[in-house]
Image 1: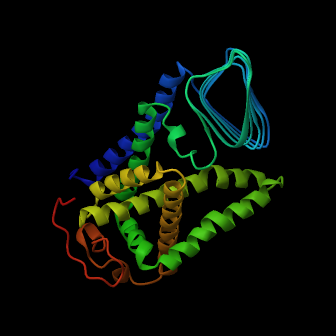
Image 2: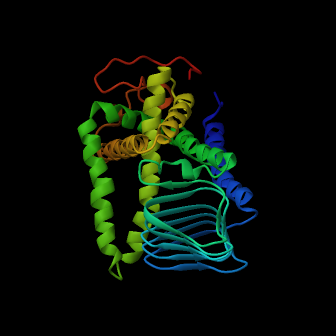
Image 3: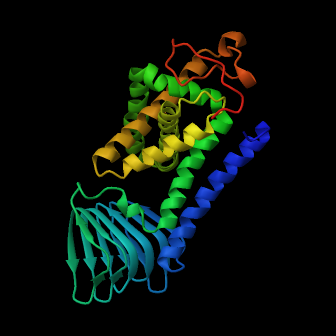
Length: 327
């Protein structure tokens, strides 16, 4: 579809870069030119007068905003807005205090949290309370941001197919062909590893490694797992047998994003799908490392472009050689 392998890789990288660029740009459009990302774990953050942020995320701490922010998210603490102008506000297990002169241009999402709104504070959107109405709707601060997030997720899926089509195929096949294996690896990735990282967080030596694991590796694993689950879904819908199924990866990712918009149930399904997809991918890596000493012929059945035959089926099912250029 895209010619040479180099062209395919360049296309996937360009799409991914566009996704990263679209997210902050869209937030800036929503928040009136604000810029920057502020994240704080186990501590407080203050955005003073004349200061701004695209997204302010505080975990187990308080956030005080006197300037501007496109989105403020506080998990386990108090969001204190004093004469601030904020796009959207999310508080989980805490409190939202809106002081005089504060303007929230969008919605306020409260889960196990209370709202203290002073006279003169304005919420131009709606106030949502409880888990059932929390959803992922707060992410849609504007159509541009929603499109940017979608491009980012789809770009990751396309990049994974472009750079590792064979491994993605094996992961997709293992997702349903060896569900118990994928589940075991998912538990290791998202239960055992975070638990160990959380314990290491409270040690001087383990703190940097825990931050890398919790802040970088786990999100990357989640994105990769989402790509695997999306590819499986897209392959099932399109019955794709392409050597590099870009269409199936893109369609499946969009469908999973749509499922995630359903409050609670949709989010649970998407999280489970991403976790199992990451587990299937880790299982594939584990098997590849375990069989590294085997003969090359056993690793490469001789499919097109040196990749194994692909039909999106579980191991043991028959496969056919894909038609050239097929989606």
